Image 1 (cartoon, rainbow, N blue to C red):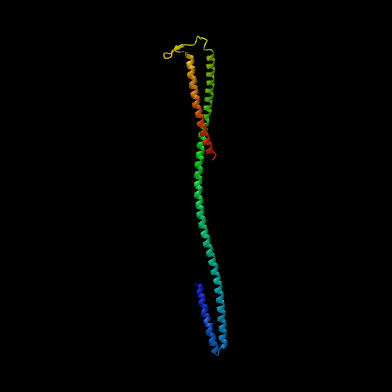
Image 2: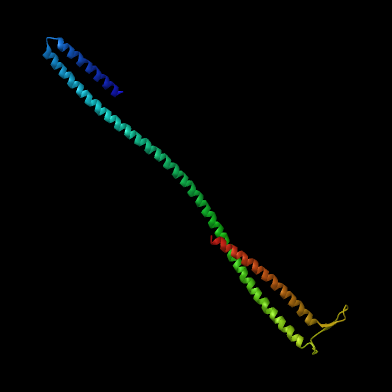
Amino acid sequence: HEKKELESRCSILQEKVDNFLTEMANSQHADVLLCHVETLEKDRTSLQTVLELKNKEITQLRTKLNEQEIRLHDETALRKRVDIAENENQSLQYLLQQKKLSEKTAIAERDKLKEQVIQLERDNDQLKFENETLRYRLRERSLSVSIPLDNQILIVSTESSTIMPTTQKRQGRKRACSLSTITIIAHENERITRSLSSLNCILNR
């Protein structure tokens, strides 16, 4: 608005200058008119200088305004990126907490399974020892089966009429029970070993 006003004043002054030049050419007071024209010309030059300064100022203000708009746009985009990063960070923290809980549970289960394996190995060793003892006794018994012993009690089978020492029957039952128990423990050891392997795979991820 100020620029238009200055341009209008310059146009009016230029018009006055032209009119004075015309009057000066037809007037008897040429010197007075000439001085007046010079004054008007100085005013016009001064106004023209002010107009140029105002134009430069307006240009600078427009440049600053554009820079501020660009900066505001960049700040808005950056704020959105920060919000997205914060949301992703919260999600990662939640996943990390869940992973820690899973690892803690897996470690506790692994330790429990290790204790079970140790106990089963002890039981297995004990059963192996008992099994070897029974086998040794059976071999000793088979060698001395023809020798009559006072502490053996003979029982007669009603179905086959076969005579067998009661002590041998008991030892046979113990041997069969021991072998069955060893088989069960072996299967249990395999199952626990597989579970430990799975837990180790989970913990190593």
